[in-house]
Structure formats: C-alpha cells, structure tokens
Amino acid sequence: MRHGKKFNHLSRKSAHRKAMLSNMACSLIEHKRIKTTLAKAKALRVYIEPLITKSKNDTTHSRRIVFSYLKQKEAITELFSDISSKVIDRQGGYTRILKLSNRLGDNAQMAFIELVDYNDDYSTEKPKKVKSRRARKKNVDSSIEKDNRDHSDESNNKDQSIIEDVNSEDIIEEKKSENTIEDNDVSDSAADSVESKKIEKKVSNSENKEQKGE
Image 1 (tube, rainbow, N blue to C red):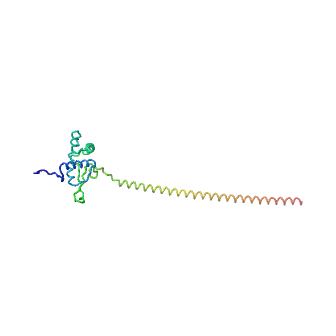
Image 2 (image 1 turned 180 degrees about the vertical axis):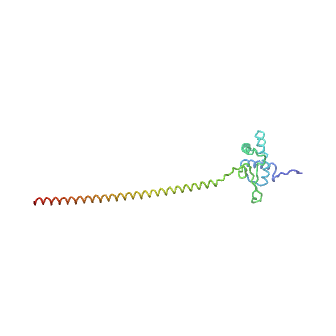
Image 3 (image 1 turned 120 degrees about the vertical axis):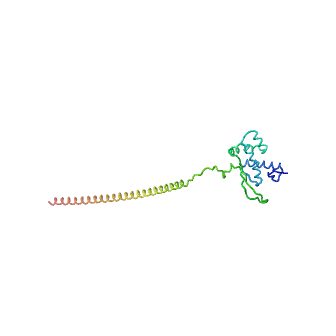
C-alpha cells in the first residue's frame, strides 16, 4: 500500500526522475527561468527550494550535500555565489510558476518556472519614477522662448542693417547733391569772373581809345 506517498512520479522510474529533476535544477540555476510542463514545474519546485535554502550556509558540508543532488560543479558555484546572496533575506518561496497555454500535440499544460529575485517585472522594490511632466513643459516653454528671442534678435538685426543701409544711401545721396551744388556754385563763380574780366577789358579798351582821340 502507498499511503502518504503524494509526490508525482511523472510516469518515470526513480532513477530517471531524479536525473531529470537534477538536470532541470541545473538549467534553472544557469538560466534563471525555464519552460516545462506544469507537473514537472511543481515537482522541480519541491526539489530545488531545499537546495537553495542549504546554499545560504556556505560550508564544505553544505556544498557536498548539494553536489550529491546536482552533480555539476558550475551549478554549485553559481548557486553558492550569486543566487545565495540574492536570496539571503528571503525565508522561502524562491521560485515562481507562471501558467501558459496547452502544448500542441498532447495538449499538456505548460508553465514557466523562474527564480523570484531575478524577475524585475514582479519585484516590489522598484525605484520610484519621478514625474517630470512639469519639467518637460518648462523645458519646452524655455526652448520656445529661446527660439522667439533668437527670431526677434535676428529680425532686429535685419531691421537695423536695413536702416543702416538706408541711412548710408541717404548720406551718399546728400553728399552727391552737395557735391553737385558745390560744382554748380564753382561753375557760376567761374562764369561771373570771366564776364567781369570781359567787362574790364572793354572798359580799358574804351578808355585807351578816348585817350588816343584826345
């Protein structure tokens, strides 16, 4: 009679079952998450959690006991170095089972089994996100103000340059008009001097004729 024997045999003999669970435990230690059937995941949880508890006490005796189950040195090193430091404050419940859809073919229920401390999506100690909407608005407003200032400065510079060009053109035209006026004045004065000289010559010639006639 099998009274009290409630564990799942997984349709395998004891040697096959122990070897399979040992390999699955080493894969879980290495990859931190594996996909298997729901029945195997539940059996693996019962198999590996006592070993993780044993890894918290890093002694030669504990390593030898865990090695008698896992039979892989790399998995022992990973378990006693990285995983044990992660679960040092956890009193149990080191694994999590996530149910998936049924498998095609035999319609078996599939599931993920993972180590709890290596999944950041379900961790409760997430860093609080600081809302930066106001800061973004201020930054946007400041950038818009800067752009407006730049555009206004550019427009002012353009206007000043245009005014300077206009003023310079007006000054040049005024200088040209002044030069033309001065030239006209000079030409008028020259003409007046020539006419005065002609008149003086005529007067002198008439005086000379009168003296000769006398």
